[in-house]
Length: 326
Ligand SMILES: NC(=O)C1=CN([C@@H]2O[C@H](COP(=O)(O)OP(=O)(O)OC[C@H]3O[C@@H](n4cnc5c(N)ncnc54)[C@H](OP(=O)(O)O)[C@@H]3O)[C@@H](O)[C@H]2O)C=CC1
Ligand SMILES: C[C@H]1O[C@H](OP(=O)(O)OP(=O)(O)OC[C@H]2O[C@@H](n3cnc4c(=O)[nH]c(N)nc43)[C@H](O)[C@@H]2O)[C@@H](O)[C@@H](O)C1=O
Image 1 (cartoon, rainbow, N blue to C red):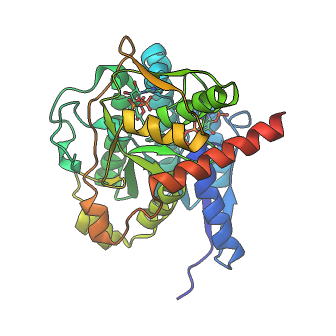
Image 2: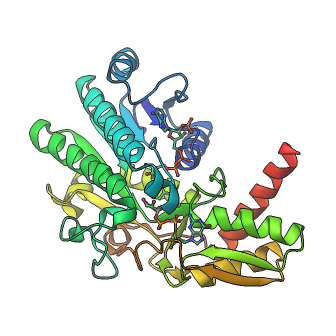
C-alpha cells in the first residue's frame, strides 16, 4: 500500500549522520516515495534558541522529525569543552523534542550515543545497562545530555502517547566526518595524521593513550540505514521490542578492535612505513564499549560495511576533499 505524503525534517543535515540520512531519503524520494524533505543550516536556525525552534516547527509543521544535530566531538573535545557539550545538547534536545510535540509531530527519531552506558558496564552492553553505574568522566556531560534525550522521548510517549524513538550508535565514521587534529574522533584523526606522515615520509606517528582501549566502528551509511529502519518499524513492532521505560535501541556492528590495531589499519591504508608510538599522557577513556546489538538484529537489521572497506572508502573521500581544498 502506498504511504501518504510525509513531510520529514532532518535536523543536522550538513553533519556526517544527518547528511547520510538525507542522501538515503533523497534516494527514496527519487524512487517515487511521497516525501517532502525539510532542512535548515545551523546559520538559518540555531536549535539552541527556543523561540526560533518554536517558530520553525509551527510554520513548517513536519510529520516526522529526525534529530541528528548535536554538539559532537572526540575524547579531547569532550574533555576540553564540557560546558558546551552539556548545554548545547540539552538545549537542542529540549527545544526540538518539545517544540515538535507542540506543533503536533507524532513521530520523531533522535540519536544518542554508546557513551550513555556506565564506564564499567558488562560487555557487550545491552540497552538495560542504562543508569546502572558511574559514567566515563571524559564524556560525562555529553552522556548526561544524551540520557536526557532518551528520557525526554520516553516521557512524551508516556504522557502524550506520541511515538518518539531513540537510537544509540556506537563510534561512527565515514564520508562527511570531521578530520580536525584535536577535536575529532579517533578514526578521522588518525587518517589525517597518518596521511600527513606518509606524505612527508616521517619516521613516527604518535597515537594518544595506550592503544589498549577497544572501540566498535560503524560506517555512517549503515547508521543512516539503521536509523530509517527503526523509524519505519510499525509502532507495534517497535513497542514489542522495547518497553516504556527502555525505549532506546543500540546500533553497532557487534565487533570491536583495539586502538593499536586500528592505528595499524590506518597506517596500512595510507601507506605509512614508520613507527607507531603511544602517548600514555593522553586519556584512554572507556577501556571497552562494545554494543549488544541483538535487539536490533532480532528486528531484522544488521551492519553490512566491513571496517577495512569503510576505512578505505573514508580515506578516499578524505583525499578527494584534499584535492578540492588544494
Ligand atoms: N560521530 C560519531 O562518532 C557519533 C555520533 N553520534 C550522534 O550522532 C548525531 C550526529 O553526529 P555527527 O553527524 O557525527 O555530528 P556532526 O558534527 O557531523 O553534525 C552535527 C550537525 O549538527 C549541527 N548543529 C550543531 N549544533 C547546532 C545548533 N545549535 N543548531 C543547528 N544545528 C546544529 C551541525 O551544524 P554546524 O556544523 O554548522 O555546527 C552539524 O551539521 C549526534 O547526535 C551525535 O551525538 C553518536 C555516536 C557516535
Ligand atoms: C563517539 C564517542 O566519542 C568519544 O569517546 P571515545 O570513544 O573515547 O572517542 P575517540 O574517538 O575520541 O577516542 C577513542 C580512543 O582513541 C584514542 N585515540 C588515539 N589517538 C587519538 C586521536 O588522535 N584522536 C582521538 N580523538 N582519539 C585518539 C583515544 O585516546 C581513545 O582511547 C566521546 O566523546 C563520546 O562522547 C562518544 O560518544
